[in-house]
Each structure stands twice: as structure tokens, then as C-alpha cells.
Length: 183
Image (cartoon, rainbow, N blue to C red):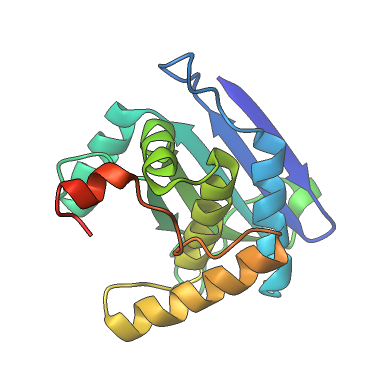
């Protein structure tokens, strides 16, 4: 298991990763992921905060998706916002006093690899997108309704542009999808 943590004056992001099952699909640079998260928090002008991201395999993703969403398959990301009562604050170490716990995210590395390939994106671009997407979920954004999805996607596109990435919703589809009638 790998772990890295970056703390700025106001934010802390920690990424923990299980070793990938497939040596052909190495993990992304965990420090880069933390930087995507920290920049996203700065762009959104989030007050002092802390969050943890775990990169896991298919089995753990499927188990948690089944447990928390009643969906019996793995997914690219699960977000778990910290929803503490107003009167209670999450305990944080002394060196992080004053930070708000945003929550945790679990990213399924094999699903990310599959999706990046299918969408013709680099793995780094897809991870940047999913990190932004997860942070927005922790902050209360959702995409259940069309107007919510439009608002969330607009924020993702704006943030990713500022991080140096293209619109994640304009990906190239593999040519075999047209042949299968999946346009």
C-alpha cells in the first residue's frame, strides 16, 4: 500500500493506494492527484479542509457500492461526505486544528483504466476529472436531475480547464462502438 499526503496552509489531501492487480496498469502519480484536489479546493474557495482518497480494486469498490448504494457492481468513484451534526466537529490532529473534514472518496483504479481507454483519454486526465467530480460531490453537488447534472458538469469543465485539461465530456469514441450501434 502506498500513501502520500500534502498539507497547504489551509487544506490537507491524503491519497492512499492499494497496489494494482494488473502490473500493466500502474497507479497514477499520487502527488499529482493530491495537487488536483488541492487546486480544486482553492478554485472553489473552500475554507480550510481535509479529505482522504483511497485508490482500490474492483472487489472493494463493488462491495462498498453494494453496501452504500445497493448497486451490485464496481464504480469509478464513491464519495462519502462528512455529515456531522452542527454541534459536533470531527477530531483532527493538533497540526491540522481548524480544518473541516470534507469526507472520503474511493476510486476504483481498474475502472478508471477501462474508462480512460474507452474514452480515448489519458489516465491522468481521467483521474483529474474524477478527483474534481468527487470533490464536488463532497461539497454537495449532485447529478441525479438534468439541471443538477448541467450545473455540476459546467463546474467540472471550468475547473479542469484551469488545471490544464480539456472538457472531459468531449471524448473520442472507439470506432468499434459505431459498428455495434452504440453512438
